[in-house]
Length: 280
Image 1 (cartoon, rainbow, N blue to C red):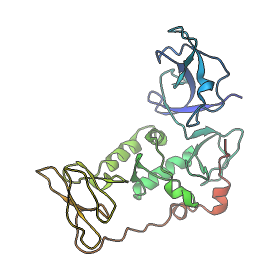
Image 2 (image 1 turned 90 degrees about the vertical axis):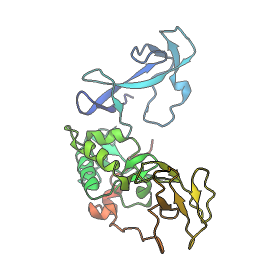
Image 3 (image 1 turned 90 degrees about the horizontal axis):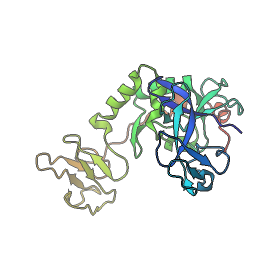
Image 4 (image 1 turned 135 degrees about the horizontal axis):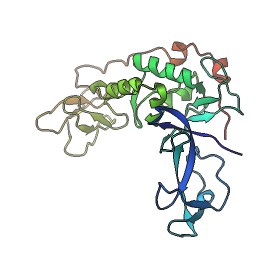
């Protein structure tokens, strides 16, 4: 079974078909002979090591394990592998938004594996960025699947290279970078917050009585909240350990409620179910 892969090529400024290159010593050579046939799916997070075993023709090692990179089929240069872009010619999965069946499709990392054609993915990203639906996650500034299932809201696109294929001119990616660097969007999820004044990263505990490591100073709890101060001497901006916003009096503000993405994009349950990418 021949597998088709895709990558973002800086020369072509587009999503292109890509071929895998196996190597051990020098990436540019690709001089490696696999003992077994090429793995069926290099999109898997963990390709079994025995499937990448073989002989390196550079260092003449007969018991080596290959690494994989990808090259543009048109230009031959190295491309950024787009793990979430799949060939849809055999599966015939419908796009969740337009319901058309396209040859190339984007598969979200949610449990339901909802899919969009590349045109709808581009439209979705532009609208989502313009309406403030991109947020800071552990993986960076990203957006989640617009599907109606519960897991869709917790499935950010981890590799930002996928956003480079939104337009050839690079306008969207430039705007995305600008938006990500705004102080209001630099707040990290988890236990850290980015100081909006000096951009210093501060460790914050979510407990009501946090034990913050030095040099962060934490005051006594105030109404189940604690004040965390930026340790930089010329800053000292204070934050709330509960909502991670600048220190405030009274209770934490309620989060702004936006309509769910599937309602914003008029995606019904039936449309979403029709767009599920099959399990491997």
